[in-house]
Image (cartoon, rainbow, N blue to C red; front, top):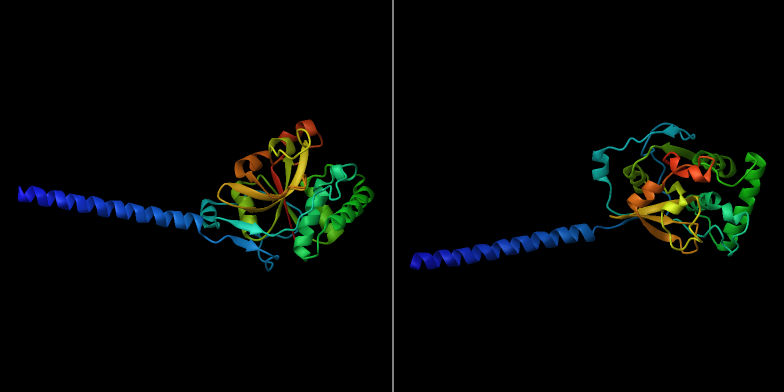
Length: 262
């Protein structure tokens, strides 16, 4: 009887210790998963080797090079403080603003790289100036591919531009973790932004400025509510398609991202 009672007491203590261990490990996991610091880039980092390729800065076709070891080393949360104004900065959605998502995305990245001030008035003036430049240089300014947008970044601003094709979600995160905002071409109707007019644009560009455990954080120039707008990572990734020349064929566009640096 005494032996049985001792065993019961021991079992009770063991259960309590086991419960305490589980509780502490769960608490540690929660703290690790939720209290890790977010990496915030307030200004462009010091230029360094491109995170996806060490080749030159000219526009080129670069296929995915991400690996599982790289993915595991990525920080859990990153935010790049890119300034924001929409592609209709003064509320006018007529031309050229209706077709200015590419220009506006590029302008945001330029102002991040240079640290220049941003305001609706500045965005308005730069959109009109860039659209005129594109018409004179390219013959058009609406619906430019990732490569064409990169050429504008080089010629209009003097920046370096690289287009990556057939990318993965981790490729995008790797660029963000290196402090590089990522411009993405999209099938605009596939990302489900409730603030778009109607069904949304067939073709669209926006800037990915960060990520967390579930979402990509964007500056979506397609709406005045687009600053820091979050899209589920898989939803945004699935919608990435470069311009094909036809809005009805946009979902057959190649997966591409544009990275602009100084």
